[in-house]
Length: 108
Image (cartoon, rainbow, N blue to C red; front, top):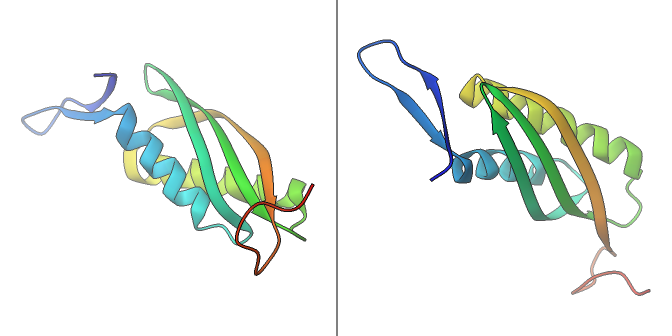
């Protein structure tokens, strides 16, 4: 189990697994308007620092650079607020588009 200990005070340790950190990042990204789905969240931890890579599906018409910035801000903020860990890098890849009202990925 990959984990990060964030606190060894108050009579015990707080241990966070990589699964929990991936969930926090993925859920924060999904809350950003224009994000349809998060295909993958990869992370690396060292000391109290986290590096993230997110792959997501965006809604057609979303300004993609702005969407990536919004996702980055949301994810960094959520990880910091919920864990106290510093996100030193958050890469966002838009891997697919969905047209509003369509059942699947945008036509190519």
